[in-house]
Amino acid sequence: MTVSASIERELSAAAFPIRDGVFVAVVGPSGAGKDTVIGYARTLFADESRLDFVRRVITRPSDTSEDHDTLADAAFVEAEADGAFAIAWEAHGLRYGIPAEVDWSVANGRVAIANVSRAIIPVLRERYANLAVVEITASPEILAERLAMRGRESRGEVLARLARSANVALSGPGVTSIDNSGPREAAGERFADVLRKAMAFSDMSGLI
Image (tube, rainbow, N blue to C red; front, side, top):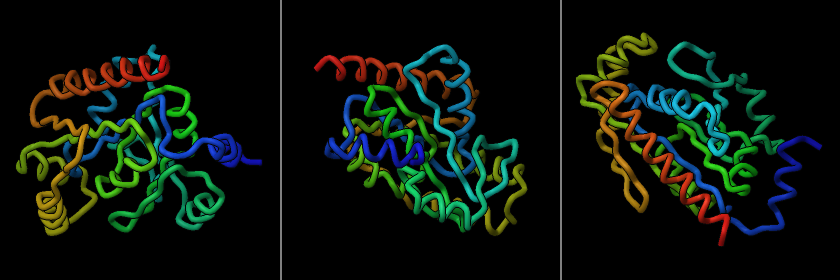
């Protein structure tokens, strides 16, 4: 039996949504610096055992701008069918997955942090009882500059991506917006505060 299948069997006895821990969903437009802010917190809380910084699985080769695991498209589809992911979605012609181990982590009172698409927030709200959504933003000028520096897309594709993100608004409870147009430390400390509150909530939840 695979690890993911074992986790699914353990969780099947308990109805969704999964409780006790907290899932922190980090969202925002490309170029906002989501991975930079997450990386700041990972370094700050390097010795904190209650936090799990989730590595996504993506059907794109790794690069220096993003920390993730890579699978070919066919292998991703096979892994998804085998229950390897708690959540999976498609965006910009790529497949993304959050490893199934995250369910175990949250069910055991930990705080899981992952960079996700805002389109899956409704699915996350159904799956996890305690969901904190952190939207990382930046000014349009900063976004355009950062996207251009990546060199992944043409100028037209960059402008189209910015236009799409400008038309999407988040709603619902537990949403925190952090502007990352300035120094990394400023946004990073605000994000760290969110994680401290999530850990405190998990600690209390486990006592109930």
